[in-house]
Image 1 (cartoon, one colour):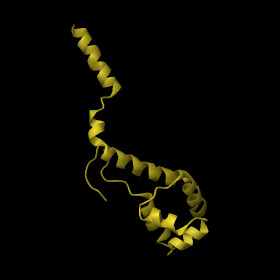
Image 2 (image 1 turned 45 degrees about the vertical axis):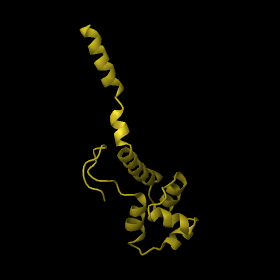
Image 3 (image 1 turned 30 degrees about the vertical axis):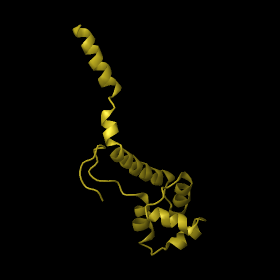
Image 4 (image 1 turned 45 degrees about the horizontal axis):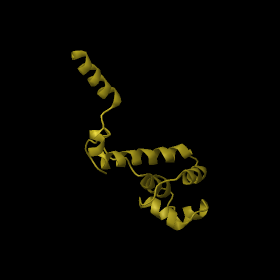
Length: 116
């Protein structure tokens, strides 16, 4: 895990949903990737790429996982969204710093006009 503050204000990088799938859902009962793939009617490759953090959880996969594990699709999609937002904010931090929020920009312009 990446430690330290980020632009997002998070203490650490969120855990990829593939790691959560592997560590919290597959590991305790000793489930293999092949077994899970068969049970949710998908390919071994798909599961392998998810647990190795090379593939994101799609809406369809979230529904399959939620049906099988008795969770909600929103759980899986929220985990993916949190991870994705963090990654994008970290990658684009320099660009994001250059974007001035509308209210701050508008307020400064109004203040400058009042001085004239």
